[in-house]
Amino acid sequence: MTSVKPTWLTEGQEKRERVHTMFAELAPVYDRLNRVLSLSSDRRWRRIAVRALELREGDAAADVCCGTGDFMPPLRRAVGSAGYVIGFDFCEPMLHLARAKHVPGELMNCDACALPVASDSFDGVTIGWGLRNVSDLDAALREAFRILKPGGRIANLDMTQPKFAPVGAVSRRMFSPLLKAAGAAAGKADAYAYLAESSKRFVTRETLAAAMVAVGFSEVRTRDFALGHVCLHVARKPL
Image 1 (cartoon, rainbow, N blue to C red):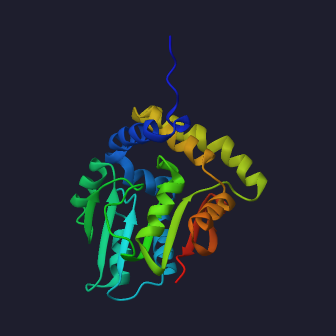
Image 2: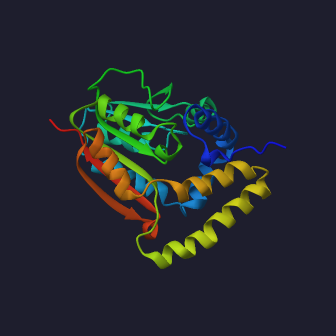
Image 3: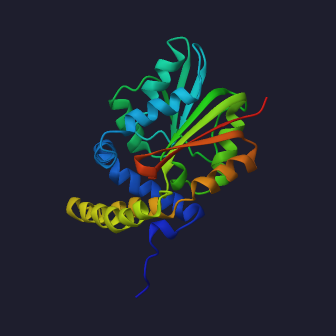
């Protein structure tokens, strides 16, 4: 019998297709899952990330891998009624839920590695828990860099490994088994296993910072949340 490779070990187009299917399946419970796993802190982290963009009234902002659109309300507040906000995501069921929530901005179904917008279009870009799911991390970063105006900023939130080794050890022992058990109970074992494994296997905060610099970003800084399990990366496109 041929074994099926786990989604977290796939790459390229195979990863894109498998992750798309998984998020389509998770869409109905995605918001609730975020609240539970973050202990309802993810909205605060998003607000902090948006403040780091230093957006002004009338600016244009994009949320890449927008999912159900939770970054869009704070982006709208930052740019005001005169500004422009758009969310990009490749999973239509997630966008359907964003529309049902009446998020304040435009929504577009597209891949983070090939955004159908002009270069130098946005003053700020956010990405929340999306880069670990893309088929090509460097391509997604290049696209974010391309669509930003010179001087514009990117703010990325994602999972990372705690710097304090004992915290990481406890997390590895408890988080993955609990998430996988929850997935099994909900009948979504494969999807929840992917979330657990992709969190563990995503690049370190240092590697992601270096990848940002490699595509052209400067002034990269980081801030940890949740005892180092979540990291905010903020960087700027040079003038």
